[in-house]
Length: 352
Ligand code: TXA
Ligand code: MG
Image (tube, rainbow, N blue to C red; front, side, top):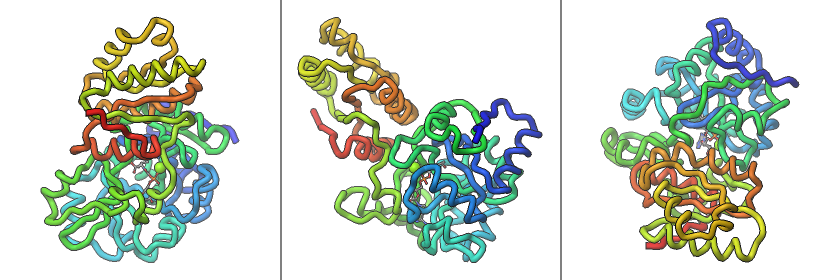
């Protein structure tokens, strides 16, 4: 299959992408979080194609993306007050809620669960495409299962070329990590996956905000089936560092690694850390570091936006190992460190 890349969409292009989706083709769509692999969310055969293209276990449910709040009604059994308040506060945006599904939603969309995940993305072009399709769009992140989620059309192309009908290119994703997923109860939410809508933000809307046990305890079975799989993994082993002594620890570990090995290392860090490393490594050692700087130390939004992109770049450069500067988990940092924990297979070192 030839995979078309569509940029600077005209109204006709938007219509055409909508038609491809409605008729059961896969089209990758940009969102503010990460790129999604879209399919008709009411058509089981179309969703089968998602599982095939991603190599994804079919018990892992999909998020249905809608163009507006009204489109949710036919997809759910009922909308309680909490759900209405949450939609009003966080849609369109990086926020997904699970609610009891109606008969209209195929089991294929929910992996057999009786709740369906719903999100209205903060991306006008993609909402226009969903509107043109006239059906909810099932869209997991547009990566091969287990790989970092793509935040650019190039990242999608690397994993999906030849497997899908089209990729809509609208430049880099603004947030860079996947949406917050919550289960909605009465005046209570359970965070199944942390994201840019933080626990603090949710607490302003609902009385009780809890984290699913699996987010803190790696031995718990998660409620979001997707959270149990090894996720977001770069090809080479990754170690993350948090705390004041991060530059010093990175420099020491880099020196040891580079002396014992002959390959290169990926380093995801702040501008300040990069400067420190350049000053403290030999010219030869520094030359074997592929440094991806996200900006100022502690700029969590910038870190979140570029983390997956950096991992995909390190994969391309075929580094033997990578190091990442992390952050203490508050606000958006909770979501970022949740992804770093997975990407490092729990190798996060606190060097305070
Ligand atoms: O930001 C995002 O959410 C992106 C963009 C494309 O919208 N999508 C995304 O989809 O990250 P995906 O499929 O990669 O992740 C969806 C997560 C999985 O962990 C899945 O298990 C969970 O949501 N999920 C979906 N439906 C669920 C349900 N009914 N109950 C519990 N968890 C659910
Ligand atoms: Mg994903």
